Image 1 (cartoon, rainbow, N blue to C red):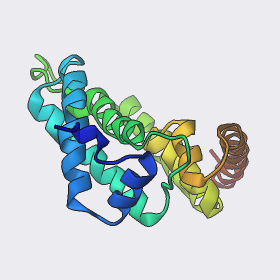
Image 2: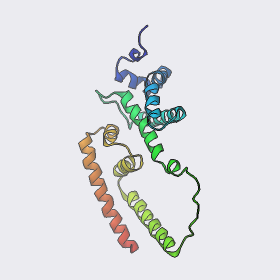
Image 3: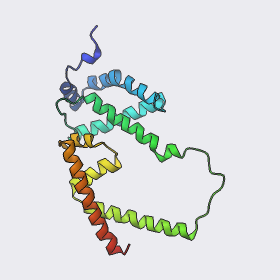
Image 4: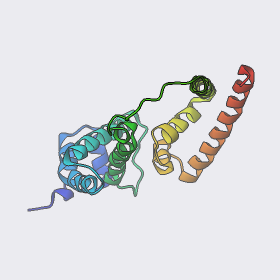
Length: 194
């Protein structure tokens, strides 16, 4: 009996089948890729339920990028490796999330807010608002790159694939965008008297 992994002769054919939303491509991913991902999760602080959730979320994220055109097949790229990375990122984000870190017991004592705490909160809120305002003034390309890198925590390699650029070019672009954001933020902070 031939191996199921031979069902898609090339990564290009798998990519095209996923683009056409062929059921056999999804079935193949679950039968061929999911078991190794489940093993990776269970050896990295997770359960089988965690593996299933992370796999589904990662696959959905990948497919959304595939359908929007943000992810396009690059010759020599293993599609399964890219999907695995999407799913892996979901789990690593989950591990680092505040929900998991703070799922411990309630603190024994509750500290009441002081005037200093309130002042710190106001300064923090003003800073966040200034950063948001600065981000909104960035050009769309820079704003998207910053979001992918800092919010979605995607690697430069993933972003390069999405933008159809070389990784070194994305690194330079990220630096330029960061410098633009700093300049815009400083102008906004000066206007606000921060």
